[in-house]
Image (tube, rainbow, N blue to C red; front, side, top):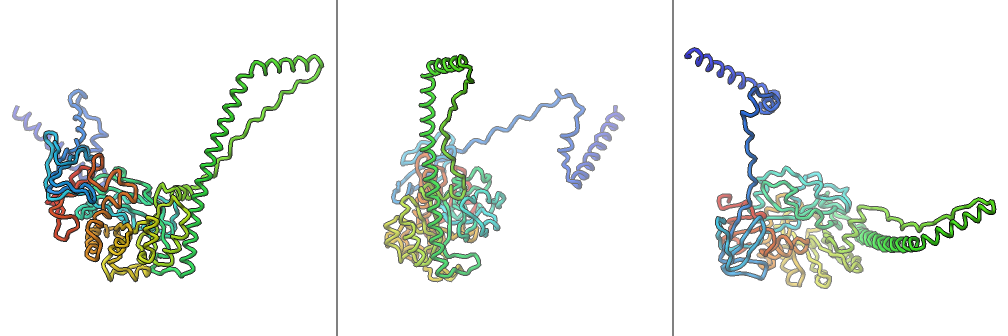
Length: 489
């Protein structure tokens, strides 16, 4: 027996040695031992091993957040408020919130909605961001980089940025349609898309090589932009007319069919009589030709004009980066007749010169509050950090963005907002610009931008007032997942 046991131990040792050698060999040749094992039939009977039970799906964490101050939305605060989050959605908001048993509790001084960067290039590969040959139908969603390092996404989350609008061809004349994304350190892009067609973006007088355009080219750019919107409007009208004509044609065909059905017996009797008469007279009977009304001609499909039609109809906003007074005036004048157009000015260095028109037309200005002295395009040489505050004082709706130039500038957006506050923008206006204001401008307010029932739980828990210099973010929730904690600071 001892000899048998010894022999068995030696056999097992030989097998282990062989398995180790095979693993090394497989690793060298790029083949996993697991793959080899899976492809090799086992000698044991099938009933000797049982399949491992399938892992249970991860249950969404139920979280109750309590704060001394709950900012539901700009201008609406609940003292001693609480928020209940279930399955990533806000299900209760108020002073009395009763969580189910086992819910995780998070406390803080202030709770508010996560910040939004409405002018970013984060998540877009470098080549696409610099592309100049884009057109209206080119979609940013097709150029998203699915391999952005989760640590970089966490950097943005640490700053309180929970979602952003990103785009390709940032300085192209027509940048194509942009996308809005939620930031999450681990979820794939197809699970964080808030909108794959947030708006159409264009530029006037801004060039990638740093050189501006001459005055004549600037004005021709405005005419070209207005012409494109006109084409979109005409395309939309063609579709409307086609749909109307098609409905009329279908109605006529139905009426004709009813008429034929009702007169079928009489028509058959008349035909039989005509056939008999022709036979009696020795003549050939000829069937009467039936001419059916032709359906209306289907308009030619043009993907670029289709996007422009949605812009002209106001279904998606048009964001135009423009800085000089002459172009701002020309743009406002050229788009006056498009009553449904939802125009947003990006940059707007000289926007104060046209502030009354902006207020009258309800055109927001998306300001890039970059630090003074930062190298930028020539069109922004007269830019002043006080622009956002002065526009607010003039009654213009102000949004704040990181400029759409550098991917990681989004991380600095709260700091840029503080610079704008220090130069005249009210703290409440800055907070609105980074939350509900941005969400409304880009049709995301049904999901993000405020702490309200039914919205996605993209939330911040802070130790002080939002955008105050000494305030630190303690927790960040991305659709109900706690992605930043005090230990991540």
